[in-house]
Amino acid sequence: MTAHTTLERPTSTPITPAMYEGELRILDTDLAVRLGFAKATKIRDLIKRHKASLEKMGPLPTVGRVINGGAATEHYLNKKQAIFITAKSETAEATAITIEIIERFDAYERGASSPKVPTNMREALLLALEQQEKLDEQGKELEIVRPKAAAHDYLAELPGELGVRDAGRELKVGQKWVTDYIDGHGWSCVEGGKRKPTHYGIKHSYCRLVSETFNHRQTGEEMVRDKFRLTRKGIGRLAEIIAKLQKENGVPFAKKREAAA
Image 1 (tube, rainbow, N blue to C red):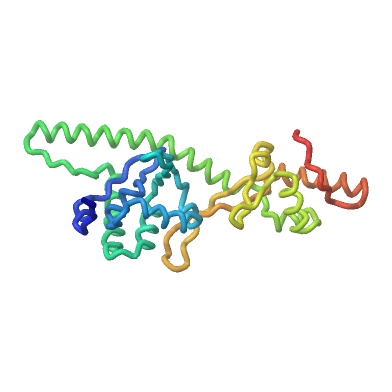
Image 2 (cartoon, rainbow, N blue to C red):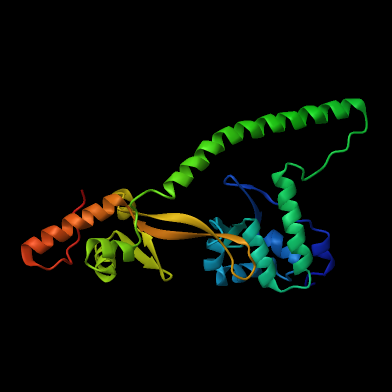
């Protein structure tokens, strides 16, 4: 007999986010069940189509599995990613589930996913003790997070870092020369239409990605994107290379890969 999915299944399966690699996330197939997909794994086709957009909202962790002899890749979505996929699913339940995702994630973040109601004095005292321990723990975490956040703000705005266009202007060789050189000499590469630092560029602190937040033009939702930046060390290294090449032959570009320092 062939099993089939009914529309009652999603309404009886609540959204259950859980911690994954230090962040609250939901498994793709759990969301698919709640959305009423006839086959839960079909949600991964939707995720694949919108992968670039999802990665702008944060990392998209995956776990490889072998199921019935076949390879499968599970995705763990954060709140923004889960809402995005819910909207793209265009199911009848999408609006209600969007609200549920926000409420469930917020409840878990507050540590109130399963509210407890004491029935006697002993349970009330135990609950009060448990809540105080959580508050103490959150206080400790804040003391750790605050300096990390301050460090992130500083790193995101290090003085002297430039994009390739501004670096080309400062070095007086133009944007094309800069992009040709850093791509041709292994500092960076272009993936999906976006420039990213390579392992070599990061290792030598020549370039890096800087995260910035912005509001979506249509939804107003706060989102995150990465910008490619040449560090002051990288710009200084380019200046040295340009001066050397101009002195040798007047041509500020060579196809030979720079020797590792």
